[in-house]
Image (cartoon, rainbow, N blue to C red; front, side):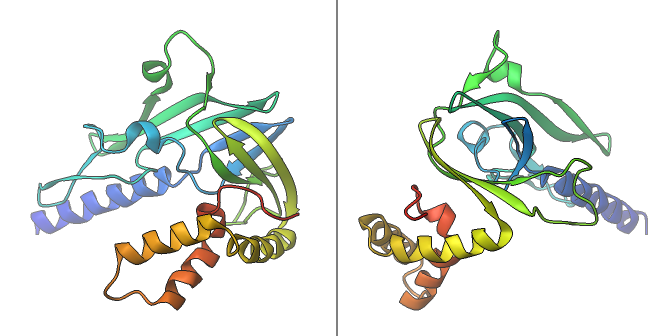
Amino acid sequence: MKKQFLLILLLAVYFSLSASVYTPDKLLYNGKEYSIVDSKYLSHFFIDKADHTEMTPDGEIILSTAPRQGYIGTFRIEDNQLYVTAIQKYYMEDLQIKRENAYSSLFPNTTRAKADWVSGLMLAGEVPEGGFKNGDSPKNYILLEIKDGTVIKEMKLSRKELNNFKKRQYRSFKNTEEYHTVFDRLKAEAPDYTSDRSIDETIEFFILMHSSRILTD
């Protein structure tokens, strides 16, 4: 009974930590706060690191390579340059969720660092003044095309406009060499059970992740 109670307690804390870790990275731009949809931009530093481990309830140590694991960043755009200005590390100690500043260890003696490792499309949802409530999703978005930390192009889109844009982006993407590169890579990763149609559907669904440039207005 005591063992079962400990297991339940550990699982509760684990899922509580996981929920906090799902907090997306933040983007500050033109006086507005945005919530970055795909929080992958700190994995450049933290994936496969020694402190990137988890313990299962039976005591087994496993390595976590999830980009979101334990780290939440704040990014800012100034003069078309993308900077990281804060990084919070979340961890569990004595069955409590704690946080600490992880920025200074990576970027000492500076208040901002050019995020020149970031290239591709970044989608972020505008955060309303009172914040999101009751699981609301953003009504307005900003889509950024970034090359080595420099903003090349941007689009402001409503939720409906974003959905329509994704369809146009996919159609344009199919006519590029990049599409064939992505298709061949996905097929090679699962050659035994992935059909061409399912690969194509995956690319369409995750079109903003697979394409690196804005291809249509």
